[in-house]
Structures are given as structure tokens and as C-alpha cells.
Length: 243
Image (cartoon, rainbow, N blue to C red; front, side, top):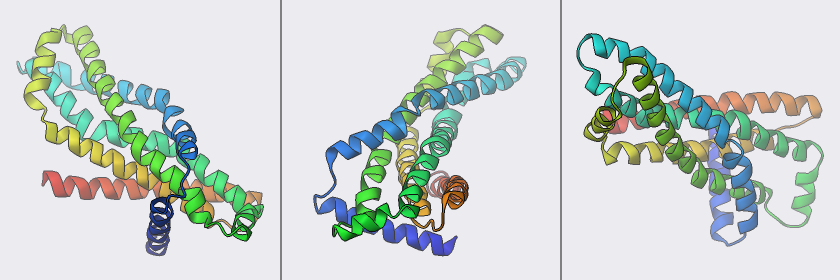
């Protein structure tokens, strides 16, 4: 994993150099943004909504029994924004779009398309990596922001349906508990997760050698590695900002 991390860092610097040289095409970034985040939007929102609903079911009754039902909204909002929304959205996008990135680049590698790019004196790392990294870094925070709103609304609906909590008390609790710092940190997490998804999956695909069987193996490794690196990054960010 350490060697692979070093390759990821090298590819990131190569992609940044390629981008700042003005070689990245805007249309490629838009195309990758649609493939990475827009196509993953519905599944991400469904996962976050269901997660918020489950949390609301678990905590609402317990809060009601202790007379603390006024804090349901704030509790759900904190959990959603600090952890659930950025984490679950990144995992959903990584499972759907990240594996697609790895499979696509791995297929290009085993069919010698990467070598063909090199003969044209084009840096294949910059050409393949930079649009995906830029698109993922920009659009994953957007999806996370929408997911946070959907998650909070999901908690509102379920808490109202289960314990009859008035929406005004729920929203008031959210406003009291929530701070702009939490939103900024969640967007920072989403930004870093977006970079990791594209970078790790693209690197794994780029390192693929062999044939069709190896493409499948590489895709599985990309899903596992991107998840592991995101969890490590999540731990480090929480350690820095919430310790």
C-alpha cells in the first residue's frame, strides 16, 4: 500500500503539471463530471435518506422516553453532516464511478491504447487522470451538500411520523446545534474523497498488466483501495478538526 501510495502521489503531481500547463480540455472535465457525480446522484441520495431515516427511528423513541425529543433534529444533523453524508456519498460514488474509471483505464492499458497516446508525445497520466480528478474534486462536494439537505429532511419526516415531533422543533434544534464549521469540514472531506476516488482508481487501472481477467482483478482492487484510503483520510480529518 505504501508503494501504491507513492505512485498515486507521483500521478497527482503529473496531473497537476498537465492541468496548469493548460492542456486539460474543459469538455473532458464536464463529461467526466456527468459520469462520476451526476450519474451517481440518485443512488447517493437514496442511501443518505435511508440512513437518516434509520437513525431517526433509532434515536427518536429513546429521546422521547427521556424528554429530550427537542434534540432529535440537532443530533441527526450533526451525524449527517459530520460523517454520514460525506462518507456514504463517497463510498457510493467510489463503488459506482470509481470502479468504472479503473476498468476503463485498465482496458486502455491492456489493449495498448496508452502506448498509442505515448507515440503522439502526450503524457498519458495527465491526459487520462487530470479531467477525472478535477471533475471528481469539484462535483463530489456538490453531491454531498445536496445529500446533507436530503438527510436532514429525511430525519424530519421520520421523526414526525414516528413520535409526532413538530417540524418547527426539529428545525430549531438543527439551527442550534449546527455550525458553519461542520459544513466547511464536510465539504473539505468531500473534496479530499473526490480526489482520492479518481486518483486511486485511475492509478490502479493504469498499473494493470495482462488481459481481460486482470482488468476485473484491478477493478476489485480499486474499489478496496479507494475505500481504505478514504477511511484513513476520514480518520485523519476528524483527528485534526474534532480532537
